[in-house]
Amino acid sequence: MVTSTAIKNNKTPKRNTAHRVALGEITPNNLGQLKKLNTVLFPVQYSEKFYKDVLEVGEFAKFAYFNDCCIGAVCCRKEQIKESNQGTKLLTHILQHATLTTQHPKFVEIYLHVQTSNEEALAFYKKYDFEIVATVEGYYKKISPPDAYVLSKKL
Image (tube, rainbow, N blue to C red):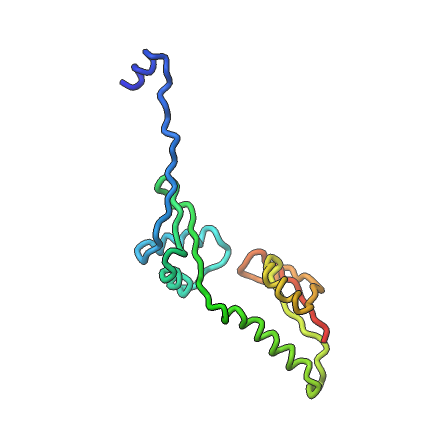
């Protein structure tokens, strides 16, 4: 009937162009869907602890649905501020002990590897006067990009 009415009135039937976008909870019952999504989208394999933590962050972990089809997810991790200082503490400890005059033989340089795409780590080490001195292609075997920078600090 819709077609004959449309032809009779010389009107094209209107298509439903409204799309439904929604957010959904991540629960123990649909956690497998998140695991599958992450496996398909990301080059890293997340640990079971990651998925356990996702279930504990409430509103900071959600699925995104487009017309009832899961198209993505967001998963955040809550961290204590003092924990974020652990990298600083560790590096400061190493730098202090590497420069002690009682060390024999004396350390003259510290170097480390950082994934080429890890801008946050690069910025962190540059604050401590580390410099990029080389690039090692294929350094990492199970993540992408697999390349690493070698950062060095003269003592």
